[in-house]
Figure 1 (cartoon, helix red, strand yellow):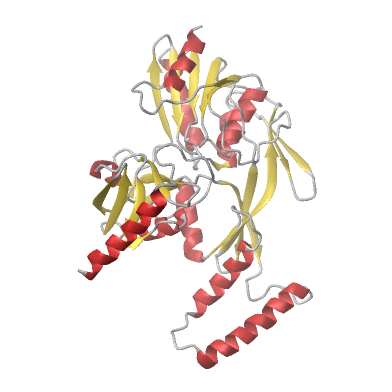
Figure 2 (cartoon, rainbow, N blue to C red):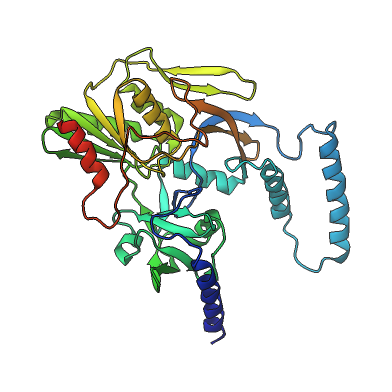
Length: 411
């Protein structure tokens, strides 16, 4: 009975917040695309760095005045904690949270310290290995988590979770106003175990009891359309997606494709290398694919290394969820004159992170570069405007953006 009362209080709290929410497809601020599995992350765009930096207890920072002040304060805090605190002390958690707080002080949404377990999860995500319920989800401006879409064949899809569902409770814990990382941490778990989710759909609360499973992620989907138009949907830039993309290109060519639509809608990014490999399939050898600028203003030019494997008319579909690696690919194709774009303006995540390993296999992910298109067009906080702006009518049965792309290719 007490549990029911507690849940009612949480739902009443949510009703107050709901009036200010823009649910369904009206998420207009920072969006986090997450596969709820063993790991969740923000828009991803990173290099793997092999650098080993000194362990957290061995860093030589004694000469830094701020570090000395922090150390002195922590020493005083610990003395007081040991004297008066009545709870249990988890030394490892204290250390990890202290480091996390220091990195969070950079006020950079993409930089973070990861514990050993978190780094392992991060690698699993990049490799496309997931255990969970299988949803992509987004965070709206009120920091409430909305389902962007269930993954095909996943427990979430089978149970009936839909795009636009707002996650209100996870295992009866209120997750309103919390980060998507927090929601993901509550949803994830061991394969075969269950998790209880309560969502708000329109004005109705729905309960789902889901069993966590290994989730198979398909990075690329292909289809032959009429009039020799090939269609490829690229869902993410995880490791190996460039090879999958090439296989899709070869398959469509064998089926007679003469023109191509590349769908980057809802693709929030991934590995830089994968985006550059795909761009290399289209852009002549020696041409610029990407320009990166480091903290000292040094520019580095990434160039196509191979002759194109396909030369045809291309339309790219984009929307406000197309970010990071999607913007690298789109920018390279547009600036080279290889493609036009249809849809809405992209998200505008034009910075790259590198991962630095510590000796205990924890990791520090830092924003280290800003990137620009080959024509030196700024992306970060700006996004890429489409050549043909077409809003998607969510209530319509037909895909207006895809139809516009087909129309352009047919003409």
